[in-house]
Amino acid sequence: MIVDVHTHLTPLEGWGPTFLDRVRSQPHAVGIDLDVTPERHWAAMEEVDRAIVFGINSLVLEMHTSNDSIAEYASAHSEKIIGFMSIDPHQEDAIEEIDRCVRQLGLRGIKMSPVYQHYHPCDEKAERVHRHAEKLGLPILTHAAFHSMYQTPMKWANPILYDDVAQQFPNLRIILAHIGLPWYSDAMVVARKHPNVFADVSPVFHLRWINRALDLFHEFSVIHKLLFGTDFPFTTTDQAIQNLRKAQQIGPKEARVPEEEIEALIHRDSLKLLGLD
Image (cartoon, rainbow, N blue to C red; front, side, top):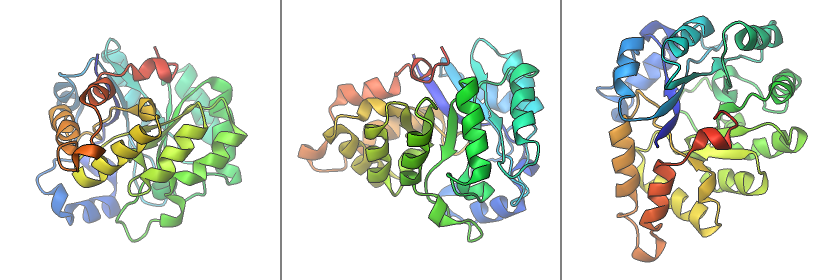
């Protein structure tokens, strides 16, 4: 089984002008098509057994993908696709929108981002979302890694901030996106400390960082807390798998993660760990 816990279904205009301008200026993003239609997403998921899909909504960065469109797509492919809503803690109807997305749309988790949405993970607005998610049994997937947009508050990107969140909400399942890069050691200690905290490995194109992060998670016996994710459209399933395998060949032999652990990561039943099976 292959479960991709991190994929986007966002039309070009949904990313917002700030994000689009910055991403297009990055060398690693050359050639990436950000116009993700339902048809294109479905074709890209051919190699996986299940996939979590979402958009990103941010008032401050003018990013918007309707939760209804995610739900419509997930419902049309319910045998494979699991839809997450995107909630901006600053939206006045955040709690009402969570309830609507669960009861009317059948969405099963929440995509959040302190970086894109400009909030501290422990502030009052975020707390009410985390509290409601825990109450309803909804996992959250949060951007907990760097970004290059100069408008974004980098101080709220570090995954160590989720130590406090996990202490306050011990039954809330949390996925720290992008393995906390470049703060992968902080992502590791938070995942190691809290039973319900995990990290995904997307987008797997910074091979040296991924090599070091995998080695660290392996050294501290928490590589089982890593979940496979592509961050599609930024990488594909095949690219992510090949890069995970390749990353272990670039460091010293004594720092290489055993091949069987890499394969276990690729084929992990993440949905069971997240209560989504």
